[in-house]
Amino acid sequence: MKINAIDIKPGNVLEHQNKLWLVMKREFVQPGKGGAFAQVEMRDLRSGNKTIERFRTQENVERVRLDEKEMQFLYAEDDQATFMDNDSFEQVTVPREMIGDPADFLQEGMICTIMLYEGAPLSVEMPPSVTMEVVEADPVVRGQTASSSYKPGKLENGRRVMIPPYIEKGTRIVVSTADGAFVERAKD
Image 1 (cartoon, helix red, strand yellow):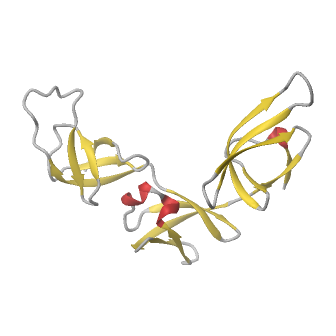
Image 2 (cartoon, one colour):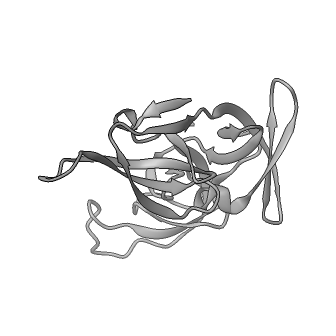
């Protein structure tokens, strides 16, 4: 679908130079001399490379519609993660690097949102947080103030996180999938 460069918004996916680009930022520039243009910061959805492109305001660009599907995580094997569409039972395998660091928090049965273009997966969006058990927690150091100090802990998936001093081994906590940060103690 062709859209005018003025209508480009962050989050749009554009087809430009035979590649798919996710719009990160868009800024309008009106120089003292010459016509106005839209300066667009984009990231290649396949390679991850970034670029800044200038489009004249009256120029048309090709906007691409992506299919968004909720799929269930089944298993991870080597550097691949397999998801299943709960409606058609069709399975999709994506490389772990497409998910990035949050892949550490994938749990069997977890529902993730997968962006597809012509049936091929482009990105995986995980739930904002997961509940995991602390399997290792360092002892509290005497004299530490409880408000600002965190201690190292280890989760059931092997990932190390900083946790408040009152969290002990065996406690279930809520962790942010984006950065692995402690959110709160889980309400069981």
